[in-house]
Image 1: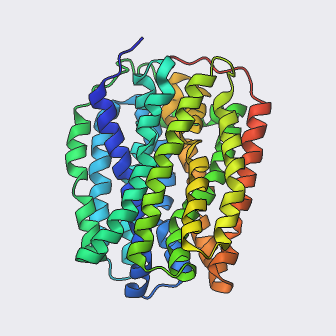
Image 2 (image 1 turned 90 degrees about the vertical axis):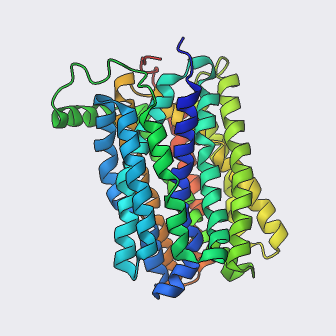
Length: 405
């Protein structure tokens, strides 16, 4: 059994939090950026996904690098890169300069999203793997919520441009901390084929891995919904719930952080506790949680009362965040140990290319033609699609791939 290095888990969790904070800062400030730069709803949606277009190309490449070279050093460089790119957004003067800044964030975040979970997986003994992964992944809702909370606070204090500079700064310190994490797998990268041969062979293996593909398909539908919610919920709050931007996004951020912590730890706890009795419990938890969240995601669109709006949103997000740890475990344990980083990289490519890489712009386009509520009906539909794939993954699960732990 390998002892869990607390230092490594703390640094990885802080970096993951910053990862999602940087992503969602733009979303929280989008209404004011739209006014200042004279953008259409479609352009806002496009900018919200701008980092994705480079991100999805870079993720499999960075993932393979993470299976061949020392991962902490790669992480340190990636955190430094995305933090610098975050600050550049404060200099934007139009749609194209903002697109360049936001898409540049994707280069750095690609390495982290591919490599970070595989490092946690290699650090942690199996008996409490889900709970350790839950600590790492609770940074997703916390970081996302901080993006909205800080966006609202910093906009009121220093304006949206300075907000990007303020948020980009802490990444430099975290990057230095990541440099000194110990690589847990000293044999990483030995006896590997040349880079592109290895990439081709890994992609072929993963595409023919049924467990992995069902998991990725459901995750893609889920990300389609969550990505659009992160971008358009502030717009829904401002336009249809009669709230101003600062208060609206701060309330949304508060609901997200609390529901995210609760949902993530409930999913992690159940995955650990039920696994001895139900070996396929992680993929089953994914299917159940997304199904339970669907009616709340649909009803929240049509609630006018502000208090009930946030109550229903809170319940919805608990169910959605409950699958954060289980789906990560499914992806990592459906492949051999030496494919974990590339598996995460390819999954990130899929969920963003076909998920939140298109959903914000698609909903923005439909919203321009109709209204934001009508466009957002696509969200509960996407959750149903995700449930179908994850339930099929549970029913058709093959014998587990033998992995090293």
